[in-house]
Length: 238
Image (cartoon, rainbow, N blue to C red; front, side):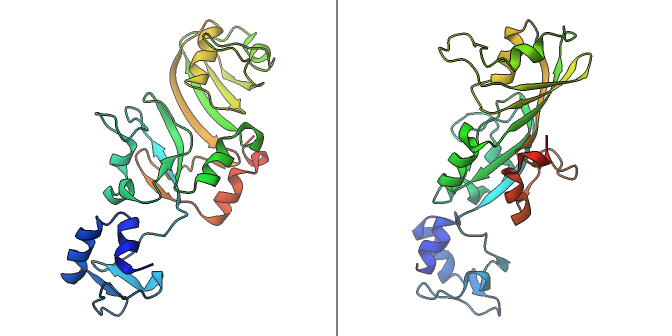
């Protein structure tokens, strides 16, 4: 892969823009030597304006999504890509959310450009559970855990029952919900079907990967190898 194509795929600009940047001396090696379009030293040795390049595909990051941000790049309002380096939205292959959180839901969101990994995480057969903390409008009545775990719960306008979900009571108006799947607004719709309303919803874990305490809302970082493995180790979070 030539240098121009590499940088364009990483989102540093179109091929023409990258060519101009290379000619202007913005791309060097780790010794400060200017690189030409046909040069291609090891990835770790390339610098763009003095900074190491982003990691090549596959990229896997975690984002602490705040409320009021949507997961669609086409939304006219605030989107999750606004919280990331601008070039991340231009990567090829594209960087996509691993299962969406709606605008009013905060918490742990994974993003990757690895399509196989994305589908492995979101597919119900993977056993990769999604864990949510819900604050409710009214007190729990006591029947919700049985309803959620029945495997027979139907949501309005859907023809297939939900997979059994686990509900843990955390307080009079607080609960932890563990899902095997990720349907549209699922937790909110489940509580609505049970006669309640979710005031605040946060995803706190995916598989065995919990939302880190030191990752503030709006912040992101790369996953370590251990954290990537933890995604598929559900025993750690539940």
